[in-house]
Length: 287
Image 1 (spheres, helix red, strand yellow):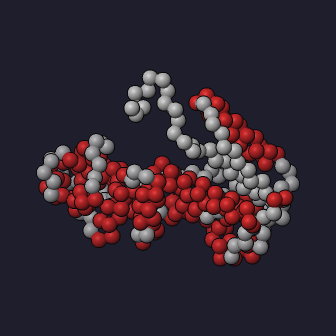
Image 2 (tube, one colour):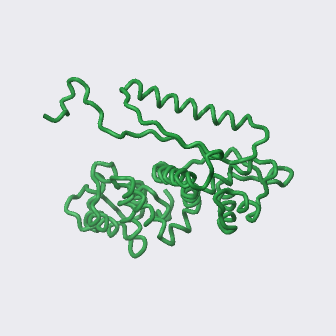
Image 3 (cartoon, one colour):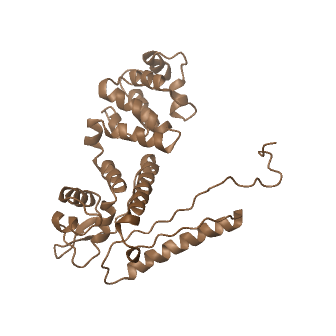
């Protein structure tokens, strides 16, 4: 264990921070125990810290403040820990997104989590994935003015510069031996704590672009269609499997294209519009 105390801003899992904090204190010259932590945090239960670290207990907002006190956190560090607890324990997508936005607002977080912020920007801005695909064109130039003039709808040069910078930070754009910036095979990978937030933001962003495309482009330049179906459990599973296969086929098609000319977006959505008929013998049916 390092002699340096763990920095809370480097964590996106408050339980992981608590475990590292406890191990750091245990390894120190002065004795430390769960009971000692409870005294510092003003807790009655002597092993509350262990229960929380092991995932057997959650923290209320008030209790999160107590735990921050027990860890010796003050000021922005304490506020960040409280927001981190809210982020990890959020019960809905909107709550989780709101909590993540509060995490991003902390100045120290923005300093130590630059890569994480780059991932958030990639998934939250439609034009950054579009710039990445634009790099497949033979005439691609990694210049803000060139990029801004070719995306639809148009973006500003400052947005294009931001997109290029983020793609370089994520190693999604690299320079080849000829000095040209080209698309890399880097995976768009985020940590498990923020994965759901980023992917949810990406889908919401691209669905908004799809809605705008109805008015932005004439029918000859787009294909927007939908079906409303009533399906059984087996057929629903088959539809999902067919979507997966078709998605893979489109990816293979794009890889095989030796002269790509235009970036397009293909969305897939399947979601319920009603409750399902309870299965026979399902005792959850209301009477």
